[in-house]
Length: 497
Image (cartoon, rainbow, N blue to C red; front, top):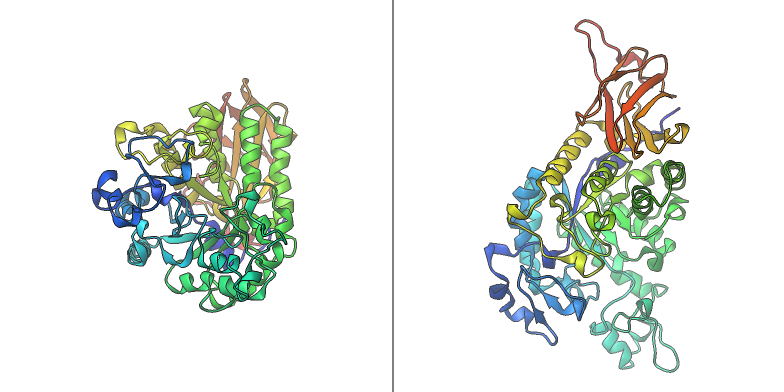
């Protein structure tokens, strides 16, 4: 079982823990109330529905409901995020737009005044970087608002802008999933690609030069693989540290086939498999194979640079999706131990509930009385365990669970350093897991003791390339090796590959 070399960019990217924020619903800067904030001129727009922070969003006119969250509110809460253990944040779109979600931009080069404008973004970037935390912005390259000046000019017959969109002879136009408020950009037009990412003053390069660190790109299947490849070549030459990540709600193996497109993808594949397994819709054979499929299809680098996500602004929240807090904690365990960057949707750490959009976009609960403290402590522990073990950050993965009878997911994470590994076991069965597992790994030697980093399962020991597992029903363990002797070391530097 040979490991593949992981480059410095991949190691750094894979070592992060990212926290996703829907800015309109996270916090209001300066401790202001919704009523105070929503009285600002920025909200003096047609169809705006003003809501109180303690209300729930409703399905009716959901894009027009505003609670008042902004970028200064995020800056005010960075101590909270630092205490949790996250290393970076990802914001859904913040560019000028008439909606609360901002996926229908009217200007890619201005920060919406609802969120505090460019000055608030600079304050946030400076505060994050002072804490050695990163910021990822969300770019929609596929479409804009039908109020965007480019589209207004195109509809009016402007010859310079008409070919920036795709019009039919009857005046209709290509639009995202037939939402006519979101006309699609014509990405085959070089001028469009110039303004989006090719020129030094383009959308993507402009904000990287202004201090943001990384980009997440919406609806990657509509943006296309060729655009991703061209963008990585151009943007990567000027900003080699920037992670470029795409959204695809499915299996993303083809996006890594040539190794020169997006660095990573949102790993919805993991989410689909984990939720199906934890809900009893598939068995452990499929679950173990799903992890193996991702490793084969994404490649190690692609997998490590992808985001392991369990929920988002587009999906039901974790506890709502599973209907059980204990199962949610098992899902979180897998999120933090499978290859990839854990992406924690705001509020998941405190057990917030919520169904489909817009219910999953409820305002953040800041009163600790509203928190599931067991879940918050669990997330903090998982982050500590992950960040203390290099194998859980950027190690390769070997899937072992489908060798066992029962209903367990088992995989080994391992780097090239001898002994730097973690054996992750989740027993979803109603019966105890008491089996011997053959371990095809050369650097956990005979007699090496293993301890559960979570402090739940009993210690065990490697015995001639095998390990005896003893786990209670519906439980988990993260086994790590340790040195038991005062004057002897199992893991000698001379065994490094």
